[in-house]
Image (cartoon, rainbow, N blue to C red):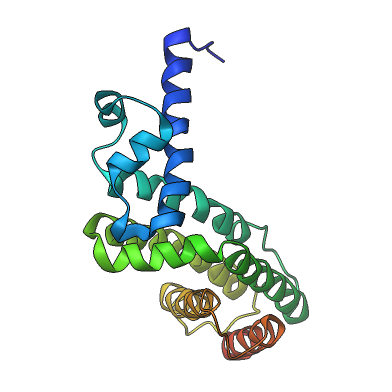
Length: 201
């Protein structure tokens, strides 16, 4: 692995300072009211320096969002190779639980994401790309289940995956609200039952 120069290391440190400061500014002010000036001041870097790395606050927020959603994507990447419907159900239930537990842990940042998606075209475009990444990964698991005689073969993996992610996404957003009309375990159970009974033989 190539050793980074002192200039490259300094650039990485500066970038990380800006991102770390942005968390505080966005959490304190919300997406709409936060400004890049506040972020720059909090990070204690020069205006010119900050604009070398980011075009605007939307650009900074996208990086924050990507970093957070990588945690969620790690759940989607859990190896999926069940031999029976029962094994598939257990794996799916485990993934749903981890996904929704993360939603609770990252509640405040998800609230900011929801706000930003409705305001910023850049953030909305990035969220759409993140969605598609999840859908593509889920479709692979559906196709595996079909190839191994577990899932109904007449279903289109991409459409199943799209519906499955949208269901999980809706529960994810609801768990960011102050009053949630269901428990985590109820959500996990019903999502898992609907999905496994819907597509598995």
